[in-house]
Each structure stands twice: as C-alpha cells, then as structure tokens.
Image (cartoon, rainbow, N blue to C red; front, side, top):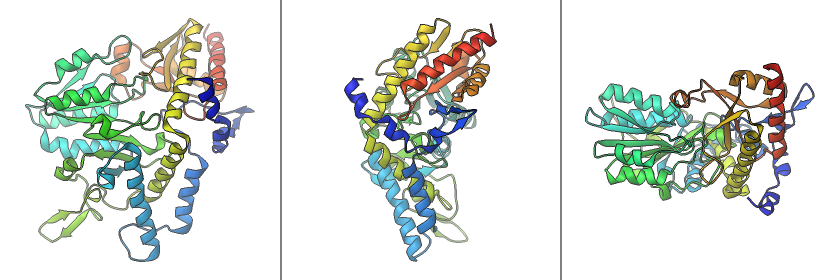
Length: 415
C-alpha cells in the first residue's frame, strides 16, 4: 500500500466516530485488536438504530398505520441496500436476514441439506472451516447418510487446489468453503472452488464472515450459489446476519422455521408460504438491526472497501514483519500478500495463548486466544490454541507496536 493511499484514509477522523476506543482501564487507552470476533460500531449506525426506536418503532408487514409503514419500508430497503452492496442483481428476493452467519449456514443445511442430500452424496469442505460450517454439515451428513470430505491445507496455510480437484467429483453435491480464514488469514480462491463445483453440477456455499467486512465482494462475480455473513463483523449491530442465495434455488427450498409473517394462506389442514425473502423470515424480524446494517453498509462504502482492504493488509503485513523479527514467535498462515487478510495468529515460545492474552489485557490490549472455532485446524497445526490479533479500519501501526512491546512482559513472567 502506498503512503499516498495511507494518507487518503484519515484513520484519526474515523476513530472519532468510535467513542469506545477512547475508553481507559488503569490509565491505559483501549487497543482493540479483536475485530475478527466483533468490530466496533460507529456513531452513524448507533444513531440510525436510535432513530428507529425514537421515531418509528413498530412491527413490519403487520399494520397499515404510519409507523408500521415507515418501519416496513426501512426493513425492505435494508434488504435492497445489502443486495446492492454484495452485487446481488436479484435484489431483496435474494437476501435473507438471519441472526448471524451461523444461523445462515443452518438455514441452508436444514432447508436444502436435509431434503436434498442422501447416502450417495458428498459434501466437500476445507480443513480451515469454522465450526459453524464444519459441525453443521457434519451433523447433516450423519442424518442423511452423506459423506464429508476435506480439502487439505498446505504447509503455507493455503488450500491444496490439486487436492480440491481430486475431491470434487460427480458425487459432490455441495462445496462449502470459508472465503477468508479466521485463523490463518488466508484469502481462498472461492471463484475457482465455485467453478469446480459447477463443473460437477454441485452447488457452492461461501462463508464470507471474514470477507464482506474487509474487502469488496461480488457474489455474482464469484458465482456463489449461497453466501453468508454477519452484521457485527462489519461495523454493524449484533443479532443480524445475511444469507444470499440465487433466486431460483431459494424458491425451490422449503423453510425450516414457521410462524407468522412467512405464510401466504393458512387453513386447519395446510399452509402455503409467502414470497421471497419473507418465507424464510418468520416472526418479528430484526428490524432495528436491519436499519443498523443499512447504515453500516452506507458507512463502509463511504470510506471505500478497496481502501479498507488496503489498510488492513498494511497493518497485517506490518504486524507479521514485527512479530517475525522477534525470533521466538511462530506465525500461522501465508506470508503477507494479496491472499492474506487483515489478521495474524501466532504463539510466543513457552507461553500459552491464554496466558499471553491475559498479559495483553494487563496492557489494555484486546486480542483473542483459543482455537477460534477451528479445533481441527489447530490439531493439524499441532497447537492447542493461538493468539489472534485482527485489524479494522480504525486500527493503527502504533497499536501494533504496543502489541509487540507487551510480549516482553510475557517473556519475563515465563522465563
């Protein structure tokens, strides 16, 4: 990333929209490097949700009064805005609101997987999958008799695409892959995986929880059949996620949650379902959260997703180089480059990741320790846990320096 581009991104001005970053504990200002888990929420998003509650709080698609009409319009417009953001030309009909990426994956698994998979079918995953995908398809396979295969991760932390070509065959029904690994930071070749799936008449599902917040994503350019992500990882609120699906596939799928708001007609004998996307959104939906997600998308696009990606990659590259220079730090995932996202997972020699994270907290540095919901991947790496520093648009190189400086305390304590 050029210095000119760095200067064009006014990080200090961006930080002013996040009062939480000014918080102090023991006279130390918060250094928030846990963005792969949840990003912070800027004032415009909080203001938009507050405006909903203060001015037009009402249920949607339920009433003809003014407040309900305003709420319904805002809720529907949020679908349209998200569709535009990810390049879904089918509009709101291809955008289903859920609680999070995990629920999006379960919706697909129960609505499509339980009905379409059988003992002759294979689901192909990757060894770097989040538990939200791995566990879900593992359980669906147990119920349907389908088998699950895993594309290998090589020593550099990338997918073995030769192995992918071997695994994806005419018996493959679905290829499910994470777009960006939340542990390795690897940006996977999801378009290539989707092409391989389609060559064998299989469908593709992409877990974009770590991609949509951090880089431009066009689901139609990828040609994904399904794609999922979460609001709380993209400067939006918790409690809302998205499942994108091609219209013709969603129309053919049965809902797996039932109730009000998703029906067309109900008798004592049978029920029929409403139009997309509402047939997959029963009950009172996340209205305020949808308003907040709309505002988050506007906020991100005003900054520019290309600039966000460049800023994060610059921080990840800087952190990688600083940690590599330490000599006693093991870093996981590819070397810095276009196929690495904005996070770095590592371990300090002779210090458990949980202990290191506790010491970081003494410095008011928020990082994550554990297996990051990728236990099988950590087993493959031969470590029980790792420490993860993950960056967002409001982070700085100075904060990376504080992270590296705090390693000395851990060394002294565990010497």
